[in-house]
Length: 217
Image 1 (cartoon, helix red, strand yellow):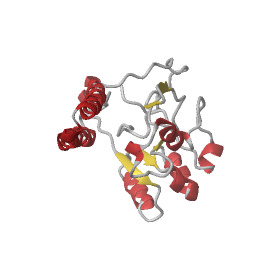
Image 2 (image 1 turned 60 degrees about the vertical axis):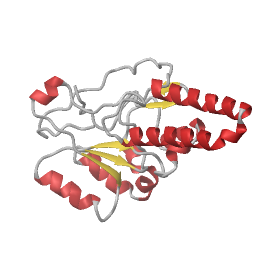
Image 3 (image 1 turned 30 degrees about the vertical axis):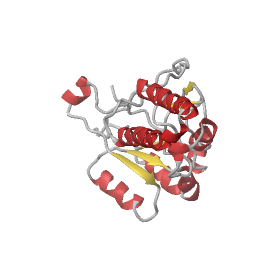
């Protein structure tokens, strides 16, 4: 995320080294869900005529997980940054984020509006659109905004992808272990929102850098 701030203030530098990778652990709700699936499979093996109850149990389970996933402040599926630190809140800081761009009709007036009020924001861009409109991505960065990774094609079925497909979707336009350069911007390269934002294939990806260094305390 980017903090709304005085554009004249220098951005703090990113840490010199990425944090070490950590093993991914499923949240308790996901562990319970896996246990329920195993129990249902065992029950059906013993009493297959109760399949309606099994279907109802699994449907309820997936409805719960879908609902939790759509709840912005939920931490039931894993860590979730949903508020600033106390220090940032005392300074009256807020975050503005824009998803799914860049769009040649929408992005330029949004940039002009932010420029008019001297505000910085974060643009979570879709890789395919960034490839088609690299000049808009470059303009975001030129005006002091952050450009972050919002997947390559924004598939609606992303939550159903296996880990390998999720990894491809997230990092296909994500350089690992280095800062962004003007050449990256010209080529539509995007960056993950934080250095430890993605949990894929059992390992936490550590990404070294974003296009600007404005960070939340």
